Length: 426
Image (cartoon, rainbow, N blue to C red; front, side, top):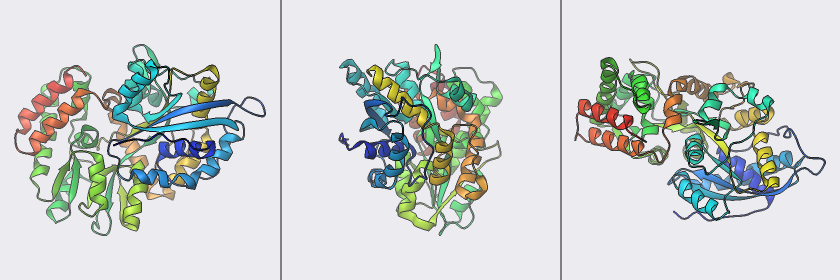
């Protein structure tokens, strides 16, 4: 897919940047950012790269939402920085490593990147981005576990600045599915009763079921290249056996990636899928009031283990002094507590990373489901931090699971090969 560069007036692009970060609709008025540099604020032209998933479902939907938000967001940021301008370019996240290496070598790299945490860690390890600076006040406002996920551990430094968290959830067609499954047993039961279920073959989309089968600890040890004892090995077998059982169900279909799942649900081919909170706006445009949202089902081995992605701001290495100052001001603006709360309540598609922001869960079933996903995901933080988009173990895992669900391997052999693959060098 060709991704065209576009530049529009600063108000529209500022809105686009935050909108692409949050994939949502209209935000309420928020407080102005902290800081500033006198009455006229910071003056700079900032180049911003925004990472999107490959083959993004309803990409035009992102662009159609621009005009719904830019006026409010422009007003807030321009209160202290009216002379900051933005130029935005979209890239598939899987292409950013190569693209940024090429741009940086020419001295034309971006000042800011809005990407997932996994991509930001990959870029930082390659020396393609610089570490953001945090004031003591901002550091206190971020949960230590969130900061750890966004940090390189050798040497220890921040790779990016977290600004939002998207939750992995269950999405379903409520006109066809009257009782939402809360366990893996119930999920297979609804397929036996005629409802169509979609599961993802890509590792970020399938790992949620590992915790429900008690295999999450074993997989995290394998990814960290540590040995597994017999019980942990058997836990991986229980997980691969469940995947095989699911594949034998007539109404369960495995799809190659998340975007295919979204398209299948929105077109009526499926009744239930795993999804992310930032998919909800696009799905609702297609399904309307029929879109249902719930936490992912637990299982006999424990809670579901969703991988909740952090959306982060990474900083480029080719910026001038004024661009560096303005880029960090923009990143800090996104962490303002009132901005974070208004984004959460208005969009209902992301959770705040500022730990002093309270989410009114009872005001929305979606927010309640997202908070449940946040609680479930605490057990998968190691997996989320260690696997990035271009990690060869991701493709190897998907290949092994594909062989399993198509009957070309057994659960026992798949489990052995999967552990060996995860224990190999990334």
